[in-house]
Image 1 (tube, rainbow, N blue to C red):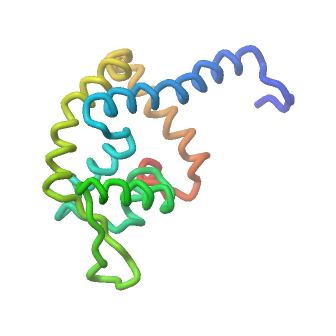
Image 2 (cartoon, rainbow, N blue to C red):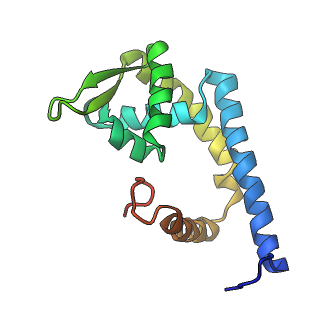
Length: 160
């Protein structure tokens, strides 16, 4: 590991394209979903997690973990989705201090309609660009970095 204040040429050759991907990939994902469904990728991801949840409901804290978001960011998005009739909030039956997010029938219809185009876009710009071996390597690399950015395993993506 280098202790230099500056990047080595090899480090730059690794970091610069990855940093570009961090900027460009969300734009591509949002662009298709906004154009086709008037949803951001985070809106879609939130609705998708609720669609796949037992009884189509999750505690807000659990949904935040599953979407790799802070609770304030998730709350803002859920408020926006509520206004569109896709989600509603309910008190949690097991814990009066907690709130559940519940996807509505309209929200399920919206996310299911959006899925075909979203999956096609993810395949086109990401999955189809990788060989099976590269995909396995990327999973290993991603886990290694996620363990450093979420060492406590608060986000679902970091939990094993």
